[in-house]
Length: 447
Image 1 (spheres, helix red, strand yellow):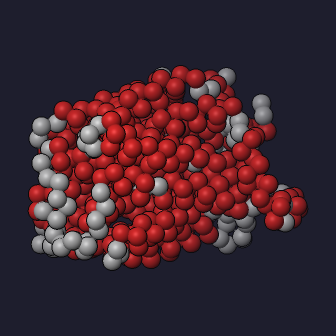
Image 2 (cartoon, helix red, strand yellow):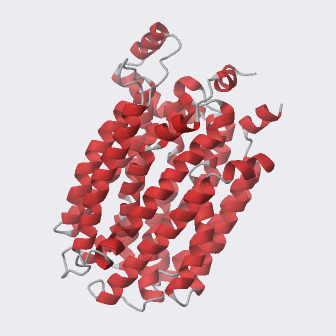
Image 3 (cartoon, one colour):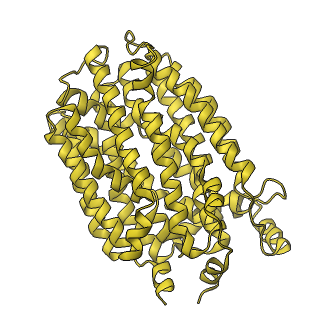
């Protein structure tokens, strides 16, 4: 048995409420991501963006993840403070920056400013989020990791449900204006972002102040190793050189992640224009019908995130009966069916059925790849490799942002609904690739 696996198995088991507390911050993080996913295309269109410009404007998200996550992972592995621990300083810093950027984003007076704010906002989200993935590996033994990531998925689902519904709630129940002239963001969206900013900060702060971290096994060795990598050259080599040292399981999961996240990015970019045009028959971003359709997209996203939250605690049960890779494959297939079925929806309510399959896929994507990954990683570089793993989330998003607009414009008559078919097929490919994954923890637990 390897040293890494032995360390993982021998960690003390935590109670359900300890796992709850350490995962609660993801509720706030998903408020940020949920508002971004559900409203950024809408904000861009309100500020004058065309359909074929949306994908490239969204490229900020994946690029910031590509740069920020491995850097934060690298430095959090080398951080230790007796009071604040290893990962929690980054949680709190990211939450403060995210709170500020969420308040500024819906007040952008021009498209270029909104595009720039997306870069800042997404960087802040990534600073807070990346250490949370490593947190599960830091604190939980092997047999509790699937539950740990499933609990994160639960909070992600709940946070995204509320965040997705906020514009609809403000417009329909609190009588806040849902329309605005060209170049102005509706008040319903603005107030949603303000609410999300506060929720983000409070939820992350709850985890920071209710959870403790384990110190390094050998403080002197930890400090000595940190000193060896303190120079700029060593730091640069440490951040980017480790890419060539990825474990086999991580490489196998990279292919699964690529096609999974290509699908998700296609959905996030194009669901609003696809639904407003294909189901509601509206293309003018200033019209009441368009904004009604955009609000309904928020409801749809709330449904798939709600399904994801409910499914989160079912996944460990199914995985125990079968395996994690088979469970992930099934969920990805359901996601593919759900995404393709949007093309055939003839009414708003039919879209809600499509969201069920997408919810299964989303819940699994948020938990099972990470549960399979961390067992193959060295403990002392856990944060770094989890950050590098993000490459295989953001690279497909960069590819999607680069080619989807071109494909729709040149091959699909600029119809955004076609992106749902493209995403669905990509989900099926990701599901098939699950069969090549070597799940180290599954093998160890069976032994």
